[in-house]
Image 1 (tube, rainbow, N blue to C red):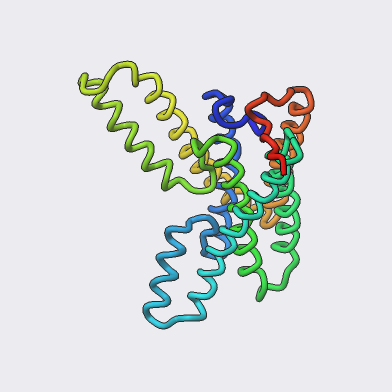
Image 2: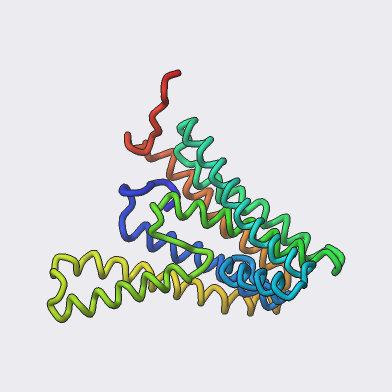
Length: 250
């Protein structure tokens, strides 16, 4: 699920990607909110809160929320740079290596959550998670041609509503029945993503209440397993011609 890209991916691969990474992201987001009261990947809420604090002159609080947004954007930018460099060198498993990088940084963040002084714990945890959620979302967005999102569900919820409306029109004969297959595929994907995110959030809070920051280390282990499996598969699966970037001659 971290090897094939774009049109070379099928419904099953996209659902597997959505279910696994959305569940992990949901666990991290929900547990962080439970632990310190901030969301690390909800950029809509964070930008809205940033605007609110700026409007009433609470500039120090606004600085923190601005930092969350900047961290998320930087994570996506760094992820893109890693993927672009890997593709320029024809690294078939570059998306898996990006997730492996996320896993390593998440393990370090888990250690920080366990052992940092309380004064530093909140900013390090939230800004660190925002960066890592940006990394993950950029990887998933690029490899799936934006069909899948895993770190937040606003877009998926909108798409789910669109496909439900389309399904209703198909049932009433207002849309061609040829659209039914595509509609069902998208409905399943969005439902898988939202359900996995929610289930991961529930489980994440339960585990965090029991073991604290070790949840982040456990999540890092799961991401590592997913990435290493993809790297192993990439070595056995040759890249398709359209997945190899064309080098421009100087």
